[in-house]
Length: 399
Image (cartoon, rainbow, N blue to C red):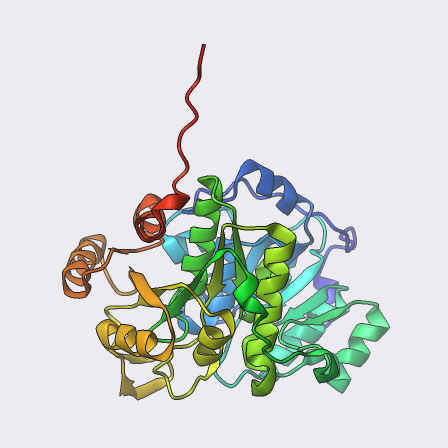
């Protein structure tokens, strides 16, 4: 099938497209950030069969928040015709879901700049069907962004097609050359900002979302905050500081994260640095949590947990840990303190979420909230309770 025959000849690749109305989703951008987003490259996010699910976490995150790209639509035939915000959070965000690339492109006045592969499969690799979609996007003149462990820029068929069409391929997980990497040297001790890591009891549980919402909320309270990303989704969203930890050789993980945090501290002079967690410290399939705790040397940790999740993602025979056990492990492994817990309300009604929050507050003896379903002030309160000096005093007019 020649996809270009199905696309209007009047459409030409350009940085533009129909601007979506401002999002009403929790944590929607401020006016200043909306202006920034309107100037960003437009993008279609491909998430066939996985949008709103665990393997669609990259697409889910981009729809909820993106500064680097202006998301104009999502591809997932399972949810075609729906609004992506309604699928994720029950709130309209005016980013529609289409059945395929043809329908998504036809919806725009101008072919979007970018095609983002929005899934994070456990294999980290491209299926044969998805390969065909990527090649179709390239044929339309769209730049490609991928967070897979398989680097599309090194794939002969895809890279040749991209070169012929004059488009770029951005492999988010591709690290810089090892000769340019650095080892941990202890310079993190010179960072004055309070460092808070958002860890979890499993992968794909909402750590990045909680960290993103909290960073925005703290900045809106006048508390200078920088978020350091450690995974592919945060980097796609436009995190100014970060690395894809799971693509860095283990010897350099702590040093590369330390380098990033020190750079953020020097450039931004923040009061708080939030570090996105990966996996779980207790999870045998992932080692990134250990590197994050060692490399960032966090003063505090906020733990993310999904009460209704029975087993670890992709590991049906591996039961979820109790959050109190994860807290004990974290505090034994690192010189830090867990100051609060945030819940992922997957599989829960609003009433059930409220009950779970109350139960976990009692059981853990910590502040507990849900970053998406509860007032954001509850999330900020976790930080302010642990560090009350960050509370900004209101300016009182005189005279």
